[in-house]
Length: 258
Image (cartoon, rainbow, N blue to C red):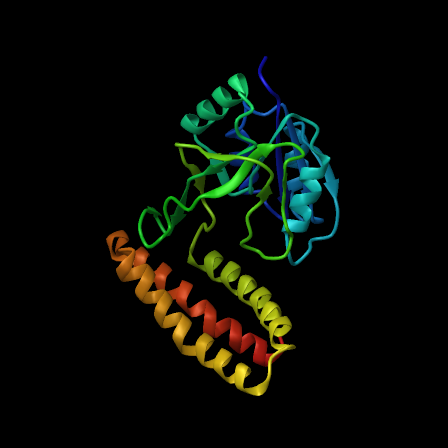
């Protein structure tokens, strides 16, 4: 007998992205659960039009808290946790369906390769592919630590790998990219502040040197040259550059008290 699937999301002002995401899981999901952070647009209305179970709460700085709330609300055998700007491809939907139908109980979760769309193309180099993310797991066997914006779920037991990629469309344009990039950097500044509480003056000086010079230089070299980000054209350079700049910018935000 085919196992059932809950698709879970945390949303905030996602009226432009949500329809595409939910359209991609039609025929795959047995339940849609959405925790919304008091969106001011039509996100909740759209979610309900797809028959989603919706819970409204506050929009927290670490959105993984709301994601975990959605995971906890799920009632089906398996959970597929998505972001509103992600789509399940037809090939991946078929692969997931086959797993639900067979379910040999060998695995409690699956890493999913992901393709990231950036300024007109999917980035396939620079360490951006396969960009494995752990989003598909048996209910009760996976949880989010809820400590970091880039964390992965922790799954009990054996974890496998899907072959087909999740499609990620995080930025409609460069302006939207900069807005998200800035929000992440402010969040990282808060993490730096917590880490610095227990360091002496010499450790703090080395930390500053590392974030202002060492880390950005290393990251740019690694992503653009070692991992061949240059193959992705000018988009690859822009992505590598701003990925590297997040270190000094986050540190400057920390110094400014943001």
